Length: 148
Length: 190
Image (cartoon, rainbow over all chains, first blue to last red; front, side, top):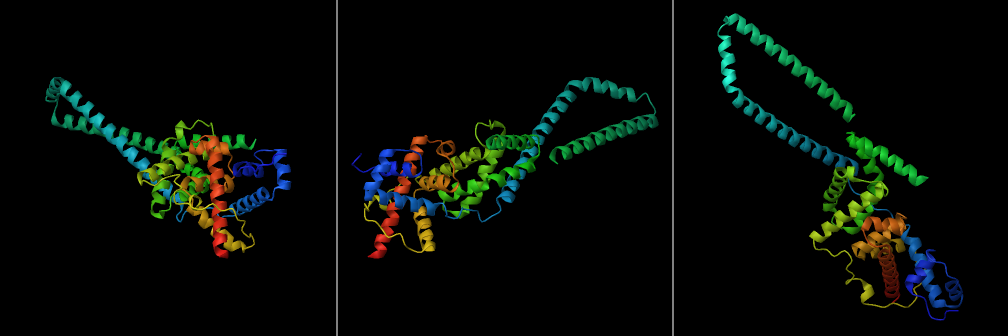
């Protein structure tokens, strides 16, 4: 039988059943000092388990979801800004490159009467507005479906 | 089996969130807020910073959700983010995580046996006070092991510390607590 005392670490491991050692069991039957330590640790562990769990003074879900929604909005805004910048750049480049041809196209309009030109312009604008509106409506529907 | 079903439900929730169902993240928050509270509140005392810390922790978790590889439970992964974020906060504030210079253990060696016959309520109050005096890491380890009933392996995953170190720190923390309680009773008797 082991005569010297066991360390606190060993006694704790024995108490928590992390180790099983017959030497410790038999030592505890004869050593009041180690037995006392076991009792003290048992008492400590039993009481620690009864300590009330910590909570926050605020509603975590509300606070977190608010932060995430704000972050998402910011991300979306940044994404849109980049998209608009790219689109603007592409349009400007296209206009610059097509300028000589645009000039020719505009001279063609002079061949038609004013009424015919107005009619063409209104028709084209109407179609463009209709298509853009349809595109936007579809986009919104998809957005609602994805975030539901 | 339970672990598998946990992984399965974690997978469904994460897939939904990654597919744009942001509000499903509220389920993740609800499932893990208790564990996060144990870590944040045990490691930091300044209540004003708790809200910022919690928002930081969950925002990091949300933004890195796609990198979660299901090698551990989702709660363990979030607890790991909570632990790292809180440690960074403590380092910024220059607060030591494991410093035990001020603990009674270094000043006294208590060998006398106290009488463990005081009123339960008083004991709990005193124990909570003594637990609060421990260094942040020790407090957290004691809480995760004894209150949350996590294994040494899970705690190691949360804190990025080796299991042996966790065991050693836990043992040391329990000894400090035991000696401080003994010291408290000894003083009370005098």
